[in-house]
Image 1: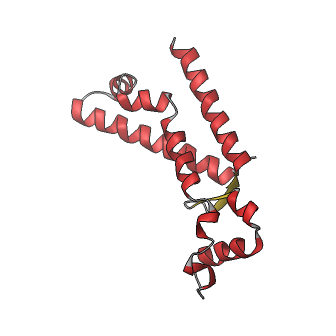
Image 2: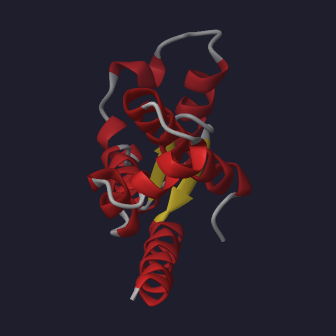
Length: 137
């Protein structure tokens, strides 16, 4: 199951992106909020959103933060008071190499996910794309 913090973070990221785009359209075109929303539905940003690009970007970011990449990091044994680094060090010491290859760190929330949870995010993305295509056709 995808950690709630990650789901909320991803939802908030998408909501903020949409809000900003609508605000930009409203400011540039000097139109009402409703007109800006309607204009947004015809934008490239909305097209990217409906194709799951925010999910793709988020998933790519997770894949880049696989803990196995830190196995030889000098940070692994460095003394620190930073709680985030301490948590990473703990994971690096207690997990096997196989587990490190299957553990990814979401920096904004501090949560760790595995390949199965990334697959869940991909399925969620695919379902959202499918639902959007059904509504717009």
